[in-house]
Length: 285
Ligand code: NDP
Image (cartoon, rainbow, N blue to C red; front, side, top):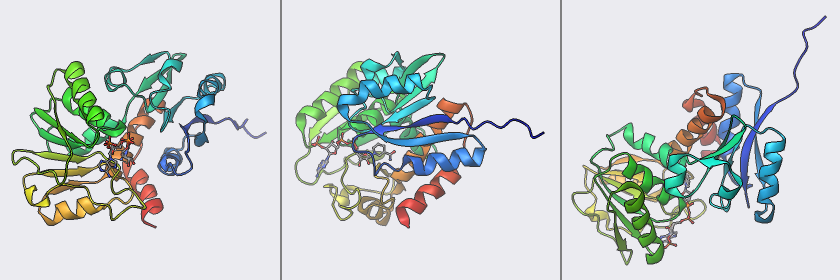
């Protein structure tokens, strides 16, 4: 007689609204398949009014965890049992993990970014210009400060958001971040070692949109990183590369945070190259 088979699958996924264009499934499911894990990653549209029900449903069905994307990253917090220190400091959750009967909120946006930079240069002592003050910038700024960056200058159009992020970094990490309002082309100070575009400028389909910085202020000792994953080679990346900067694309950050999510949910290390190739198929094809 044949051995009994299990048709049960472990569930994770992403809750967002709208969510149809979120590409995470395209890299996570190939990683599960590569590891031979009977897990599924579902892309689930959850209306903001139904978030509490959705989290209850995930608990009831024994989901192993889930990612949260816009607009749930802050709203999900009251529905969880506790937060990781990073999620607490950032004030937002993008990855929930079911651990010993509890739903624990974490944030992998900043960690994924940090891994991309740390592969090239130590974070400790870095002087950073952070363009933007939204969710991605918040995660990146707090994580950079917690990892020992020496200085962070936040440049943002909306002064209220910019000041709020500078204050959060100061309060939560002890690093006194500076805020500069974004008016016209921002000239990057010459002692900057890392420039991060954490705005949504350049995201498909607005691929020709220009990040307003003075390109003449970029020099070869600077790393220029872009959070935009699609297209991976943004206008900013191409322009910075042409000026001899070392560049880091947003695809690497997306893959890294997917890797961290899989590690948190399954305890197993996936192969990043499988995930990157799967995403490239989606974005570049
Ligand atoms: P938010 O909406 O929270 O923030 C957007 C930021 O971009 C704000 O600081 C906003 O400035 C700024 N911005 C937008 N348009 C302009 C403009 N024309 N000129 C100047 N500033 C502008 O978005 P998120 O932070 O959540 O996401 C930002 C980007 O990060 C997205 O494109 C997303 O794809 C990417 N991302 C990438 C990840 C990855 O793994 N690679 C992970 C998470 C996000 P203001 O406050 O003045 O409005």
